Image (cartoon, rainbow, N blue to C red; front, side):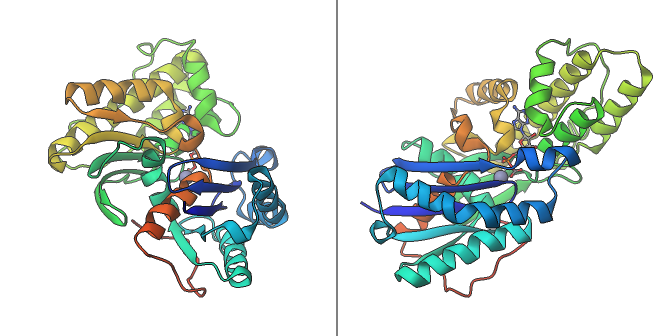
Amino acid sequence: MTTILGIESSCDETAAALVTGDRTILAQRIASQDEAHRPYGGVVPEIAARAHAERLAPLIEATLADAGMTLDQVDAIAATAGPGLIGGVMVGLVTAKALAMATGKPLIAINHLEGHALSPRLADGALEYPYLLLLVSGGHCQILLVEGVGKFRRLATTIDDALGEAFDKSAKLLGLGYPGGPAMERLALAGDAKKVPLPRPLKGSDEPHFSFAGLKSAVMRAKQSGQYSDADIAASFQQAAIDCLIDRARRALAAAGPVNALVVAGGVAANKAIRGALEALAAEHALDFVAPPLALCTDNAAMIAWAGVERFALGQSDPLDVAARPRWPL
Ligand code: KG4
Ligand code: ZN
């Protein structure tokens, strides 16, 4: 059975995982840097890179120990090679190269977005290509037709903020901590989504894309007006975001042609209200709805290892001089 070591370090999670070809996560460890970045209200690239450099090697050793394995028993080493904060990406990729060189095992350079995009197949063995994927995180907001490993058709992207970014920035305006998404979802539970009139940018538009900057600005004006409770603003924001997401997803479903499932991945997929709305949309189209478990939705190394499993099965690997890429569209 193939076993792949996965390494993730493109943002503020240092992570390692061991995943097999039959979808077993033998071990995984994630060291979050939330505490280090919280005073700044966002991820500071230099702090992130230093933290990855300090933590990654012991984290990989601990992950191997958890599984009772040595590197010799691993078939290949998969690491995120981009897109992301380049200092962190380089720490992970250089570490993977060193391990590959020392052991003679193949190196597999993974696009972080492909990691998110294929993670639903790690969670659900029955999920077949093609599927329509909503990739919604702090850095990305895309609708992709996933036709196979490395075969993606981007149907929509954001023209300004990503959905998770809109959650984070709106949370900051309400004085909630970082990361803002989970805090907004919690606060929204106590609010009335109909109280605050907020825009639905690009809803009903002929073009396929997302826009959230205007929604965030409207949240700022609502807060400054002093007319509304924070909980009502949070609930109204979340509902506006959901309305936009569903409208864009409905349009993409019409454009994509036949698919096997509607799938959501990325950190924002942790949001239960968003999951619920997407599940209803899938049911409306008689499609399966697939959302990986929450731990696989936010950044993790199991998804990188799994993308490595899929590429390894196709006989793919990368040379040791493969470059780390700050930008890397799918
Ligand atoms: O995938 P991820 O861990 O990192 C990126 O690649 O961006 O996603 C993190 C993003 C953050 O913007 C965070 O606020 C958002 O996902 N997020 C949420 C929730 N949990 C995380 N947004 C809304 N509701 C949540 N429950
Ligand atoms: Zn991510």
